[in-house]
Image (cartoon, rainbow, N blue to C red):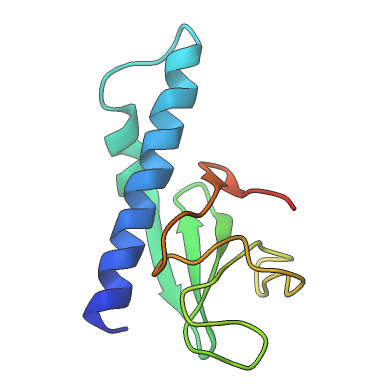
Length: 110
C-alpha cells in the first residue's frame, strides 16, 4: 500500500470516527473520546485485490479497491457482501477523490 492510499485510508478512519461520535452524541450515553475509541478500533487487512476495513467487534466495515480492474478504480469504496468479498454492483465513492457518503456502520446503501 503506497503513502497516498495509506493517507486516504487514515482520512476515511477519521470520517468513520466522526460519524460514530455524532451518532453517540444523539443519545444519552455519548461521551468525549467516543470518536477516538472508534478510530482505534479500525484496522486494514490487505488482500490481493482489496483492502478490507474491519472494526474490532469483528465486523467488516467495507472494502477498498486496491487497483483499477476495468469495472472499479483504485480507491473505490465497496460494501461488504460477506466477510471475504465485496458487493461489486457499484462503488459508494472513492477515498482518493473524497466526497463519499459513509456511516460508522459501513458505506451507505444505494
